[in-house]
Length: 285
Image (cartoon, rainbow, N blue to C red):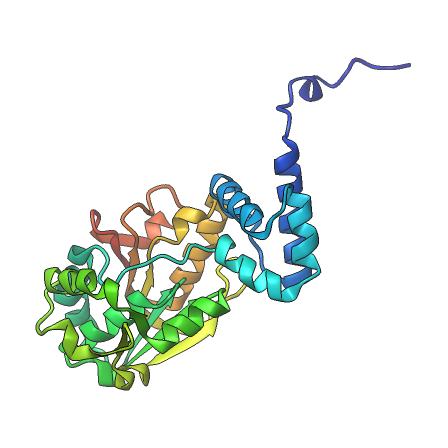
């Protein structure tokens, strides 16, 4: 005897072919390359996958999946679309001013300082922090761990080489952030590029690390993860925040992007807001 149709099936929202194929692409990438984008924001992924389809000449997500899963080199280029590689030196200058004026003096009380820049992109923030530390006479006893899942971005970050036409904006933001010198003191120009001081590179460690699949790798005093969590869904945001919480020393600091917040996370009670507007938090003891 047949029962009545399942009411939940009758009212289920139809799923588009694009979203079905997107789901299969993300599952395939995880199984083949162990990169997990399944809990990234779907609205952002739709836009970026469509851009990748246009770039690689694919009319369907399935066509893109076929190329990605059968060409590891193409997948490495696809990471440029899965991840957002856009940053600026001293982005949101007031944020960096507060780090220099209120966070770094507290970190100066430690015999050595470890900072983790998670999702470092092309490295602009890493070099900005190195300059701040240098001007506070702290760089010589500091290590900055810079991580990302994009190997190409890590190479750019490690090189410390940026287009000269970006330097004017970098310089303006540096001064607004309370810079004590001229930004030109930290780089030399060559072939329309600005090459930042290699002596600062000795205090940086660049490594592949995924907030979606990897675990804690060191105890640190400051975690900076700015404008990364906005591309994650709530589940992945909570996973990342758990990693930061477990990485930080007691009363360590967490720095987030201007559009990010702990307000609705599972870890909100673990942190005290130091500057809510600038998204700087301190781990409760």
